[in-house]
Image 1 (cartoon, helix red, strand yellow):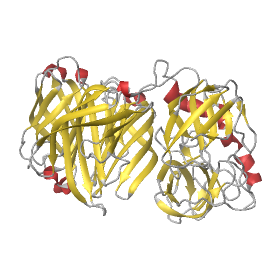
Image 2 (cartoon, rainbow, N blue to C red):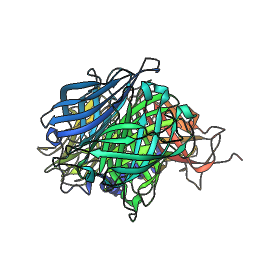
Image 3 (cartoon, rainbow, N blue to C red):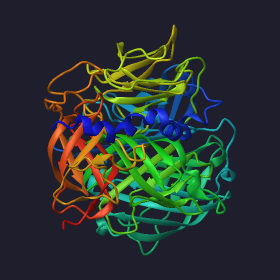
Image 4 (cartoon, one colour):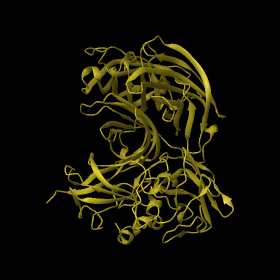
Length: 634
């Protein structure tokens, strides 16, 4: 496989993309352009009282559910890393009891928050602090815990029934009597005139007990009351002809409302009730809603699919064109997976719509969104996702954006880990006095007066400029986190801490933005496009970064051999149109530094089309952001 010479011409545009500005423009619209008045975050940004709801499902080592817990109440943050809570806790089908406690928390510069888990003091929550909401899950601690915590800041001014006015959309998930297989999931809409009545609440949802069929219900006589301390009560009375088991929204829900009444969070404190309800004021009807879902958001979710629980904390880059790029740390019964994926979405003028097969809605100020597992057809997916706009970040001098150290091929949002040998793209301001690039390997560790270190080790540099750097992660990078620092002359940037994984794949694309048609070659080294598609049975060459360690180690920044195949040490699977394909080679691309290559055979049963999804699975990650054109076998 002496193909280095052929690839040099075919892929010069890929490695030179950092110089032509396309990548910088793509990321600037998401991360940098709006950051004129921001700053990095710390513990001071999380202070005061937050109303919260947390629901947790635990399983045995086989993934079978054994217990459900929930907690609703108030978190008190002191702005210095200490937190206390007071609320009501439910455990299984036991009587509810008062719960108090405390612990510590830490806010990273990008808004990632670690906090002691109120429902399990042996674990730590992985939370995200956005513009008006705290959301996340237990993703990195030992034990089989699957949960979601959502907290809203409470108003310092008195609240009342009048605080809750306008049109609202919401979602709920419930595990009645603490039984995992009684799960309910719903998407809800209501209108409040600020006088305590919700009238008939429209709910669309499903329950396991009703055979997973999607039901449309009108919950009559629903009401609420809001006290002056931002706490309150939602009441959904029994409504004929629905049974208790099948009514989607039922009973009293203790809630907490945000300042100005833009959104609320809560759940029931009745015995055996383990639910989470979230609602937000929606966009006005005259708004072109789809154009407003743009930028970086943080999110968390809890899911039960095919009777298997999972939960996640992550980030999403919304592109405003019906596509959103997710990066998630997903907790599954088998262990954690770092997932990157492109999700299609639609939005109607009222701010409701769909994301993949889920119901979806945007909040009135475009700061909040929600997604609900309830689909428009029968499914076995029960899910809630809550998202919040990330805060703007900026700094002076040599500033490395804490949310702007990304995979150099996929540009998956912040939180996606780096891997040994991976190309990474660094964004910020004042990162270099000049624009400079190298034309061939080996890459230097100093370029244009700029150096970058990862865990204190020098990183080979391919391209530097004042706003962007392209660098390679040293192969010796290990552990769970890495600190990245840029140095310009004698001036050092802020330190950005990133998760580290064994592998973190990102496939290059023809559009040079990480999504769409993959940068894939046919066996004759011609670029695969819609007008030059592959056929079933063909072997194609997929080019990417982030596959990690190699069987034959070589020096950082040097090109791989063109005479000896060098395979990766990690597991690599490829799925084309959801069908597992045969991988004949996965390793270093001959003749290149930082570039990996997968040779894969198109399955005989692969779908036909100009945009068939192609996904990469490794031992710790799943990447599903690109597609491939396939035509029928002649």
